[in-house]
Length: 82
Image (cartoon, rainbow, N blue to C red; front, side):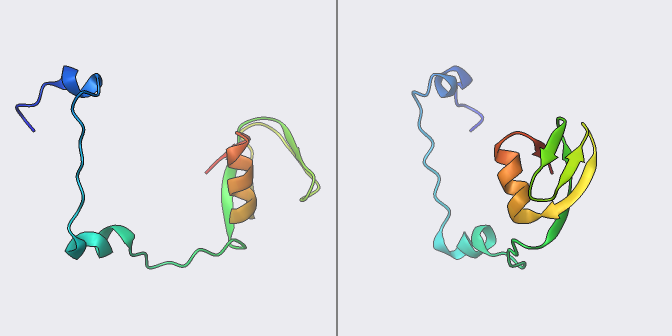
């Protein structure tokens, strides 16, 4: 990799096709924790919002505790950050 021209990579004329061997797949795919959508997480609001489901008004940069499923829904809308 030391002899690869960075301009060629930026122009996408060199394609990188790295595939880890099957012996290493567990390192990339295994997780110790199961995803629980009802688990509570603490997040920070990015704007003033009113959470209808929680019946709560939040100001900017307020830390609130909500479920993971609700947090991922609000994060896609750009209203909170983890």
